[in-house]
Amino acid sequence: SQQGEEDPQALSIQEGENATMNCSYKTSINNLQWYRQNSGRGLVHLILIRSNEREKHSGRLRVTLDTSKKSSSLLITASRAADTASYFCATADNFNKFYFGSGTKLNVKP
Amino acid sequence: EADIYQTPRYLVIGTGKKITLECSQTMGHDKMYWYQQDPGMELHLIHYSYGVNSTEKGDLSSESTVSRIRTEHFPLTLESARPSHTSQYLCASSLYGGNQPQHFGDGTRLSIL
Image 1 (cartoon, each protein chain N blue to C red):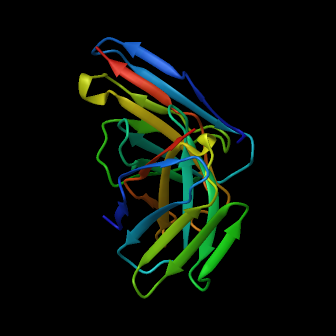
Image 2 (tube, rainbow over the protein chains, first blue to last red):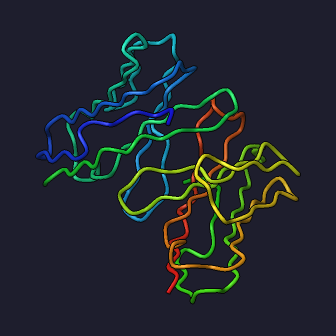
Image 3 (cartoon, each protein chain N blue to C red):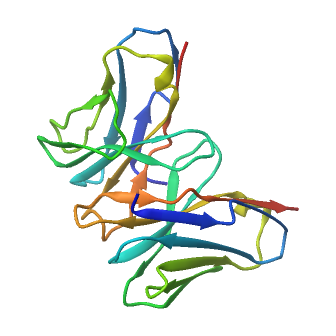
């Protein structure tokens, strides 16, 4: 598989705390994307970071990318109960096929 | 949120039946994808298409087939459903492929008795 592991598999925090999840991948990439999936729904795109970027922000989300370590992290600051979901990272190969990680299940307790 | 629609949302059906899962998008995207996802698990690509009359098998072997006669429509068919086909099926589309986000439908949760 082109995709590695996401870590942790599950994370439970209190509302207001920050949540950090990590993703590793195996091959060189053009970009890495993060998605959220609420229970019983499809995935929603959150943020895309290109291989020449090291950090990107979008609202309460901060994504970092370390191509030398083939890893990325997603930080959600000041978490809310509505952030409870599974979070996936994804990469694409040169044939436009996407590969998703195994996901991190985030539970934010009110 | 996204202009990609899947029907039905839920389907419970007996073994041996022929099933077609529908997927339509109104964004004019050339790239379309089908994924299989067991509850709480990762997504596995089973089919994809670069455009009309283009279909390719994904990395996870699947007994399903797909067609792409129109840009907006990418149905998936199981000729004879089996209990091993029980899963969630997610359809997605993308404008330029790997350098653009994917837009997902809400999925079809399929249960074969």
